[in-house]
Length: 610
Image 1 (cartoon, rainbow, N blue to C red):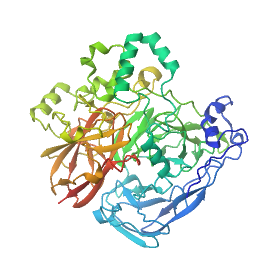
Image 2: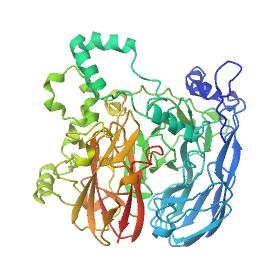
Image 3: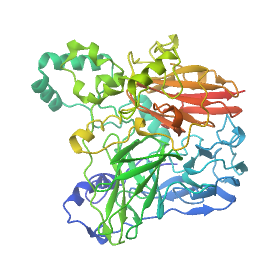
Image 4: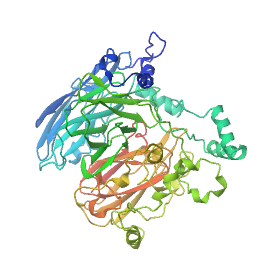
C-alpha cells in the first residue's frame, strides 16, 4: 500500500528534510514578513460537524505531505477527520461505514460511556468489518475537548483521527471570545508495519542523535577519563542509550498541525482585544510534543477535557492522547507562532496566530535535545556518591518531588505529610501511594532490561528537556503538580486497595510489557463494581509512557484531596512513579494501555469491572 521510495527535491534533499530546516531559514527573514514568503504554502482548516446524528465513512485517500503521494486512511475524506461538535446531556448517534479492505473501528477517547460503545475491537466489540456500518449511540455525559481515532492496527498512524468538542450544559466557567482546535499529529510516508519491523530489528533505527566520538572527547575534558569511562561502562552494560528519547523521529516523521506541514503552517486569526481559546490535542501516534507560543503567556484552563483551576505557563508538554485548553490574549499588533517541537527535537509542527492573514510570525529555533541521566533510571542519586562524574546535573529538579504526595509551598507540607503517612501503606486519597516498590517475579528475565530501584514521584517533574527551562530560559513549564480540579472531588472515599503496575520492557529488543508480561500472555485486571482504588504506575523504563484507562477517570493525586483533577491519559516520566484513584463505576471490559502506538501491542491490559 505504501511505496518505499523517498521523494527527492531538485536540491537532492527530501522535501521533509527541507521542512526540518525551514525554521533556521526563516530566522534570517525580517519579522513579521509577508505570507507570500511561503510560496505555495496553503493552510488548511478543519471541517466541523454538529448535531445529534452523524454519518461517517472510513476510506482510503491519496495525500501528499512530503512531495510524494501516499495512501492514507481517512474519515469523511478529510485528514484529520471532521471536528465533531456535541452538546453535553444529548444523545448522539454515529453511523460509521467502513469502506476499507480491513476491519476498522472508531474509539471515542476520554468519553465516559458504556463498554459496548467504546470502540475497541476484541474488548468492547468485534470491530467494523469491510462494507459494514456500525451504529454508535450514547449519551454525552461530559463537556470539553476530546478526540477520536481508530483502535484497529496502525490506522491511527495513517490518518484516522479527529477532534471532539463538547459544549457544557451549564454556563462555561471559561470566558473567551473565539476558539480554535489545534490538533498535533505525526505522519510517515513509510508503511507503519515497516516502521514497526525496523524497530523490532533495531530499536534505535530512527535515532540519528546517538553519541559521537566528539561527544566522548568533550566528556573526557569535562569529567576526566575515569569518570567518563565509568559512566559509559554503565550505559553499555545496560545496553541503553542516554539519547533514547523517542523511538520514531523526524527522520521519517513530518509533524502536522491540523493536517498542515511546517512548510504550509496552519493559521488562525484573531481580532483586537479578543481572548482566544486554543484546544490542543496530541493525536500523534508516537510523538510527545512541547508546546509554546513565544511572546504569549498561556493560561491552562482544562486538562483532558476537565476544567481545572487556571494556571499560567509559558510552555507545556503533551503526552500522546492528552488534551489541554489554554486561553491567550494576543496583542493586535503582531503575529504569534504556535510552536510544538517533538521531545527529541527532530522536528516540529507550527501554526500562526495573527491579526492579519498576511502576517506570519517568526518560527523559533528548536531547543537543544536533552540527554537522559541516571535519575531517569529510577536511581536514588544521593546513594551514588562514587558516581559524581556522571551527569547528575541533568536532573536537579528531581530532588524536589522526592516528597511524594506533597503540594506546593502554599500548603502546610508537614501536616499533609503526616496525614498521608498516618493512613499506613495505602496513604490518604489525594496524596498518592506510600507503598513499598516491589518488583514481581515476572519482571526478571531478558524481556526486562531495567527495574527502577528508587523511583521518585513524577508529579513535579516537567520532563526530560524541560527541567532547566525556568532557571535558564525563564519559561514556566506546566507540571502535574500544578493541576488542581476546578470542581470538588466527586468521589471523596478513601481507596480500598492499591494496584501497583510496572511499565516494563527491553528497549534494545523493542519488547514492551506491564509487570514484565506482554498483553498476549496477561490475565485481565479485575475490578469490583463500585470500589474505589488506587493505581500506582512505576515506570521501569527510560522512556515516558502516556497511559490511558478507558471508560473511567484517572483521578491524579496532586496533593489536593478536595479538588482532585480527572484525566484520561497520564504521562509517566522515565524511572518515576505516579498514582491516581479510580472509581470502578463502569461495568464491562475496558482497555488500559500505553498510547504510544508501537508500544501498545505489549504494554496493554484488559480491565474487567464486574
